[in-house]
Image 1: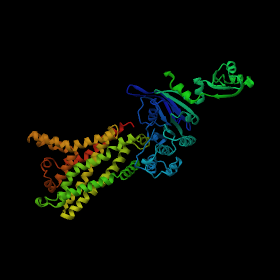
Image 2: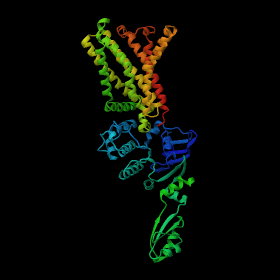
Image 3: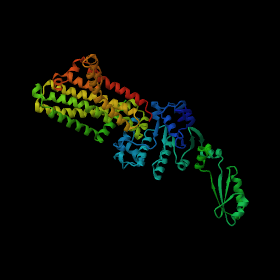
Image 4: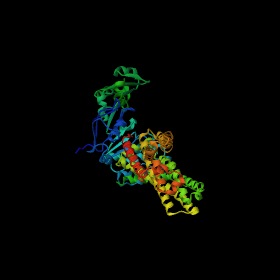
Length: 297
Length: 273
C-alpha cells in the first residue's frame, strides 16, 4: 500500500537518441494540486502520456495508487484531458459523454455534468458546431466522471475565456476536495500561482524544481522589490537607502527575503521623508524564468 | 465485456448521422437495379431465370463495391481518432484496444450488411417479380449477400490495418485506394498477363487457380460462380472454378477476415497516440 495517489520514481525515456524524460521523480498525495510547468518540448505531455501508459518508459517506475500505468485498474482511476481535445463532429455532447460514462463503467448523471461545465444549452447539438472553448469544457466534463484518483490535465486553459478559466479552477478545487490528485500542465503562470499547492518545473526532460511557491522563491534567492515613494526629495532618499531612482519620485530597492524586515525598519526610520512603500515578492514568472532557463543565460 | 457494445452503438450513430449508411444503401440499390435490368437480355438464350442472371451481374458488381464501401468507412477508424486527438483520451479509459477495434468492426459490419441486404435484396425482388426465380436462384442470391458481407469484412479489417499504419487519415485514405486497386484490379491483370505468357503450361494448370483463390476478391467470385451452375454459365467463367476443390474459395474468404483483423490488432497495439 502507498499513501500516494501518484508516484513517479526516477523515470527515464528515450526517443531515438534524445532522452526525453531524464530521471523524473514526482509524487502527488490525494487531494493535492500540482502545476507542471515548462517550455514546449520540455517533456510535460510525454510525462503525462507515460503516466497513462500510452507510451513506454525505459527506466524507473510509475504507480497510480498501487497500479501500473495502462493496467485496467490504473485506467479506471485516472482521468485525462488531452491538450486541445477534439471529438467526432457528428456526435452530440450528450452522446459523447454517454459513451465515456459507459466505458468508465461509472453511473453518471450526464446532463448534470454537462450543466456543471456550462454546456446545458448545447448538450443535444453536434460537437461539430462547438467552439474550441466548448470542446474544452466537454473534455473537462469527462474528467469529472466517476471519482478518479488522479486527474491529468494537459493545458486545460487553452482556448478558454477568462470566465471559463475561473470555472475551470473552481472545478479543479472540487476535484481536489473530493480527494483527487490533480496534475496540471500549463503555460498560464499567473493562474497556476494562486490555484495550486505545489509547482514542478521541467526543462529539457529534467525536473528542475518541485516545491511550494514560497520555498521555490527562497531557494532561488530572487529579490523582493521595494518601491519607496519620497514625499519631497527622492535623490536624498536614494542616497539614504542605497537604491536606484525610478520615475519622478520613487526609489527602488532589491533585497533578499531575510533582509526584508531590516530594510522596512530603515524605511520606517526615515519618518516623513517617505510617502508610500510598495512591496512586490518575486512572481511565478520570475521564478519560472529562473528555473526553466537557468543554463540558457 | 459490454464496453465494445458502447463503442458499437456510438459508431452506428456516427454512420447514421453522417449519412454514410444512407448513401451506401442507395448506391447498392441503384447499381443492383441497373445491372438487373441491363443484364436481363441473355435470359432466353441461356435458359435460366432472370434472378440467376441478375445474381451473376451483381457478383461482378460486388467484387468492386463491397471492398470500396468497406474501405471507405475503415480508413478513418484509427487514423481519424489520432488526427482529432481523441484516441489518447479513448485509450485512457478502461476499454482495451481489442475492445475498441471489435466495437468499431461490429458497427461497420452491421452497416455493410444492411446496405448489402437492402441493395441486393431489392434487385432480387425486382428480378423475381419480372422474370421469376427458382429455389436455386434464391439460394444463389442469399449466398451473394452473405459472401458480399464476408468480402466487406475482409476489407474492413485491412482498412483498419492501413488506418493503424498510416500517419493521419489522409494518408490512410490514399493507402486504402491503393489497396483496393491492387486487390480488385491489378492482381487480376497480373494473373491474366502471367497466364497469357505461360500459354497453358504448368502455371496455368496448377498454380494459377491457387494464386487466384488466395485473393479474397477472387475467392468471392469463385465461390459464387462455382456453387451455382446457372451463375457460372451466365458469367462465362467456369475454368478456374473447376480446377479447385470446392472448399478452396470458402476457406480463403473465411480466413481473410481473421488474418486481417489479427494484423490490424497488432498494428493498433503499436500506435502511440
